[in-house]
Amino acid sequence: MLKRLVMESYATGDLDATKVNKIVRLLSKKELRLYIRALKNWEQQHRVVLEVPDKKGIELEEFEGLFPDKKIVITVDPTLLLGMRLTDNDDVYEMSLKHTLDKITEHITEQYD
Picture 1 (cartoon, rainbow, N blue to C red):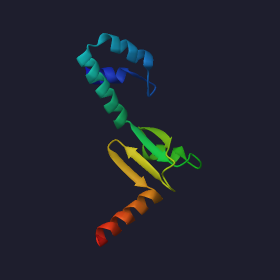
Picture 2 (picture 1 turned 30 degrees about the vertical axis):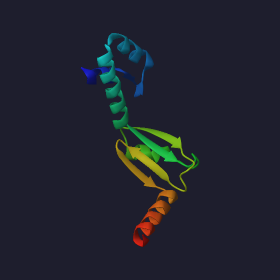
Picture 3 (picture 1 turned 90 degrees about the vertical axis):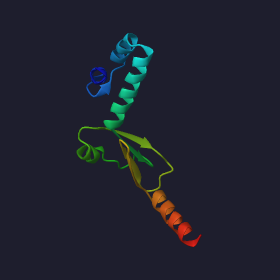
């Protein structure tokens, strides 16, 4: 039942506020908590977050080919240096200069302490 409610909450791949409001009015507090948790879970499983230092030069089509059934969300994180961080469900892939430098520093610290 909960899975069906979650599926009914979407229209053309996006969360439909009107449908969600109708569903929310019909649920008890406990059911509402379960529904919200299920919505968050579904979103996490069907979305890929791509964090980049700036949006220049990003070819969204390349990522859509890698993740055909997922919605790709691009966010800007200026702390990333020359790279990106990709989050797919619980998997995080970081390919950035900052991450590489942090790993080198960590390795050196472990070797000489």
